[in-house]
Image (cartoon, rainbow, N blue to C red; front, side, top):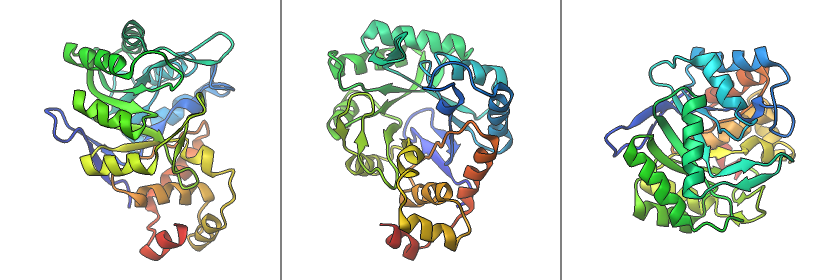
Length: 292
């Protein structure tokens, strides 16, 4: 496997080529995805290692922290190297009690984009996911139109979706170009269970749609959901390749579909390096059948 490339928005005027193994920054925050990292120097070092290890897709959000991961990215990496894609998401916010709430009215989305531009020190955000919160009372099309409006204004280069159902994805594709989809997906979690709204949303069906339309699927919480579930099949393949359970879970994602772009997150430099080694594991057809 060894760090293949994937193309984002391949049919657009501005396609992006990135390595098919990114990094999710959410774990860099404090407990409960809130506050500063427990080890700030290590957090900054992980971000710098992304560039040194040829990882050029970094996922963030201004409601991580709040604003913690964005500020860490800017501190560690600005001015940004050519080819680095920083992907953020909007549509949600945090209350003082650390609860998650929708923040997806057109004016909310605009405020979020402006805040991301400021904290990331950018004139344009390369890729933004609209994070769907099922408990929202704002019509989906109204939020999506606001995203495409800001794209036309040049604040956003590419628009993506997060926590999307097949029906919502189909609707969004009639309104504009969808560059990427970020849904919960992993070996032990094939359908998205929204952690903040409790609603079960399509996983395999969304993946099939992404493959059909050549839209990269970026799985979040792939290890969070898979690792606590001791799957004897994962354990057997891990022993076969002298690998960790996490590495096999990530290798499975890489082999499951060429349109999957994993973004495992960690606050440990050691685990970051271990995760990268998953790209070196070549699962064969027999392995994949066994894991199914």
